[in-house]
Structures are given as C-alpha cells and as structure tokens.
Length: 166
Image (cartoon, rainbow, N blue to C red; front, side, top):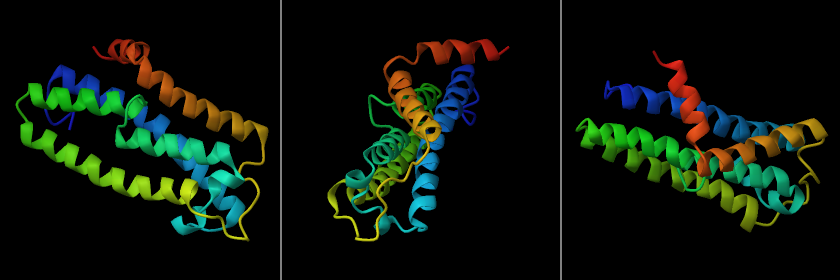
C-alpha cells in the first residue's frame, strides 16, 4: 500500500513497515517454532493453556500477534498508521479502508490464538516449557521488547530509514 501511493511518504512508510514486520514476525514465528518443537503440533487448539505452561512464549506470541494487528502501543500500530496516512494523503481512501478492514479481520484470527493460550485449559500432554534454551528466551524477550520500544518511540527507526532513502 505504501508503494502503491507512489509518494516519498508512502515509500518511507513501506520501508518502516517492512522493518517492523520483520520484528513482529520474528517474534511470532520464533514462538511458534519453539512450541512446535516442544509439542510437535501445528494445531491452534494445541496451544490451549500455553500461558500456564510457558508464560514467556505465550506473552511473546500474543504481543507479536497484537503488533501484527496494529494494536497500540505496539510497533505495528505506527507501521500501519504511517502506511494509512500516506494512502489517505495521496487520496487513496478506498485502499486505506480496505487495509483497515483487512486488519480487523486479521485481529479476529489473532485473538483466537490468544484466547487458546490464555483462557483455555491445557491438555495433559502439553509440555512444561516450549523454550528450553536461554539464548532463545533472550531473543524472544528482545523481540517482544522491540515491539514495545518501537511502538512507543518510533523516531529512531524512522530516522534510520530516512537515511536509507536518497
């Protein structure tokens, strides 16, 4: 969407979104991979009670999913905001509205996963902890913290991205 508006603001917003998208997805997929290696399942239902068994992994995954949905104060909020602002400024209102509708639909599916992790009871076969290594715990925690830091203070990332542009 940022590139479709073909403005400098749109390009800058798209680059910021790509950067933030990488942070959000690394956190989400890092947590999912850790859970998969622990329970050997890809079913969302098998995430039931993950918070009770492994709070860090559940919180990292929840934060990453909510960031992907664009919920403040997470990084995805500003990423989506800048993209939408560039689209509206370039008079691409319909594209902006479709992007918002897409985000709301995605939020529904993200919240289903969060519900399983935090509100449902775990199966007896569930593992005690998905993340076994301290290095993976550190990386997941770092990515979760990055979602908050960029969401609260996006300026350093924006300045860095602006320097990448001619």
